[in-house]
Image 1 (cartoon, rainbow, N blue to C red):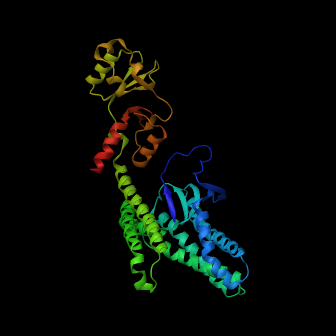
Image 2: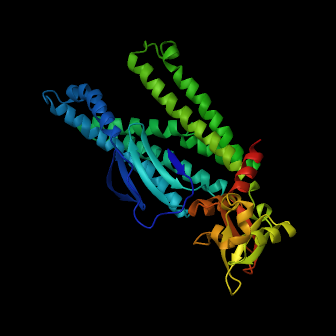
Image 3: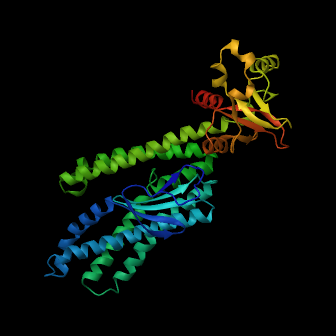
Length: 386
């Protein structure tokens, strides 16, 4: 399965490694990390496989657990191949892949940003399960020519596990890869990416409920009574599915509001005054022009600061005639001048790069258009959600 990370400015240095992980190297430009929880599942696999190893190769003693651990390593190598296929196709479509993490539930590929088209979403998602099915199919073919014994047992387990991983990941429910395939299909049919995410997310919630109830109808379907471990495993998997699906639904709701955020529409009318203009005079000029912001300029007429609304309101009226406007203006630093045509996710990303209260908006020809206040952006975003 793959996880999409939100678009964000990338630091110049290497990304910090998440706590509780070990870095093994890089594949397809992405850091390969192993979460500490992997060792827990590797130990569990060793214990579960040991009886089968003992059956095939009696007399190994404690080394049967070593053989089980080796199988866990080989199994997760195929999981890594599954995730690497996601990373490779994502990079082919121009996405940055920050990491591939192996954990006790399998693997996760962190892909920055959203796919730009339904076709991209489909291929990035479907290539993982197809890779697992291919590995499983190759292992099945190899089983027929593998000598009997421990090696054949390993090939047998590899075939079964990869075929199972491939099939389960094609279930059309987020956060599974099949959920992204469903999302891409709905997106292609309706032209609405967020609707596709929402439908696939609700499918994921439904699957979570089904998984949670599995122990209660396990005996009726398979004829085997559920054990305590069956209840625990069902609860863990259901929680994973429900959490991932819910996060996808909420993300879709948030992102659906972003297109309404257009810098040009939100711009406040602005007046420019020299830096040494008395604050009272600058306020009077803004009021006469019905402007909602004030920009200070240097002797050459170039913008150098934006009057902070918060700082202005903190100055008593009787002091304003004696204070220069520059005393309550925030100096224009890098990232505080934005193109007026920014909108949606690009606008949010630009604000995230350089958090501030106000930004100067300039037209394509470089002329001053107005001032954008983050208060207005927040208000527009929240109004769109109501």
